[in-house]
Image 1 (cartoon, one colour):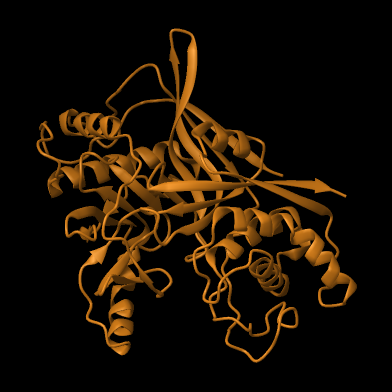
Image 2 (cartoon, one colour):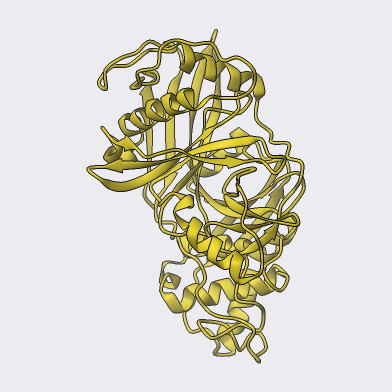
Length: 406
């Protein structure tokens, strides 16, 4: 299993904009400072993260503003372009008590699906309002009555009226002050922030990035639906079964074709006890479903419903207090896992975690690491890695998975 770890000395944020030194007053981030942060980070990401070399000398599109449910600005979205072609997006915080950059990816900007979401809202009899963002991967459009349409999956869901994200607010404010007061440099320059930290990056390769494509509401019973046939539940299989399926297929390479992708997802939908429509699962349900997978799969193999043998037994446990060191341990051991995120104990989302970035410090001989981002595969938008800021949620629990060859 291939993996790669990069460790480079921190060279600081690159400052590309024409905005001068300025203190961050109040808690709101004005657009000029947000753009300065976006330009700085885009260039720094291109120089330091292997998968983003294409972002070198990239340009930014016009900002798109998202809001918290209470009406306050939450983030600015900037599309990233190279030679006129879209090569991703970056989400910059609109508040100084949140880290400057909350997400970045080579995927299309979520707001590019806005018209599609508005059409769906009108079709369903809703009135489209402001764009919402209240935690990792929660981009949507407010349609009233406490509901939003997701910009990635076009699904209607409820949203929390109050949001408490777990960011280290003091650390975030210091990061914003460094950006506001940094000197202006050329595109090739750098402003050292510290000579001590070392940037670290690690990613598990070979984890598929996919979603489910079979339909639902069929007059059929499990397990006769296993595979690409229509399911007896609603069309959406659920983010947790899909996230778990990516990790199962990472170990079982022979199951990475389209037929077996749907089979794994259907089986995990069953073993996790997923609600009709893929409602939010408790983390322990996710963990239990993964641990039961190989037994259920082998039973279906005997019944002739699936045809490929598997070579691993799977065990899992739930960590309700997942820490930075937990993430580093699992990824460094080449063990991707499922993270179940919640936003004010409300309407969660599960993803497959495949990597991380962070900083290693040496404080008088005491070494410690602070995570900046985790790298995830989002079942709502397969194809590209998403980098999401550590603690961009109210709470999170991990389903750590061990695969034992048999």
